[in-house]
Image 1 (cartoon, one colour):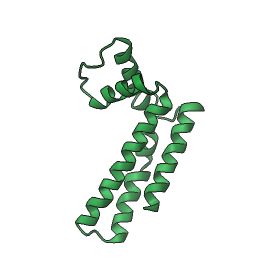
Image 2 (cartoon, one colour):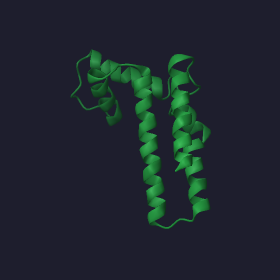
Image 3 (cartoon, helix red, strand yellow):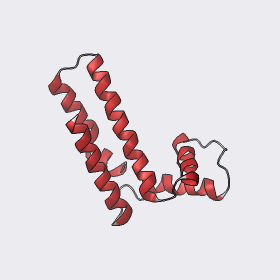
Length: 121
């Protein structure tokens, strides 16, 4: 469980850095900023209930409307999704009785692969 908590903590630090200091490479137009801008466009055009081809953008626009329109908030949602994905992956490996070393290795790659950390934070 410690590896999941550490990976989540690292992502939160990177989200903070990317939101308030400087954008991380890959976050500018490929993922985080693009999703943020698309959600803001949905809000601006009042198309909240028109389904987008990427459902996460509709969810983001809905949450932006009622909670906050900050880039940090949108990126933090991604961190929450990764956290629960890691828990699901861990539980799945426990069900199929994966040995501890392999489970930790898979979780390490899932949480700390550089492209996953930088582009999705």
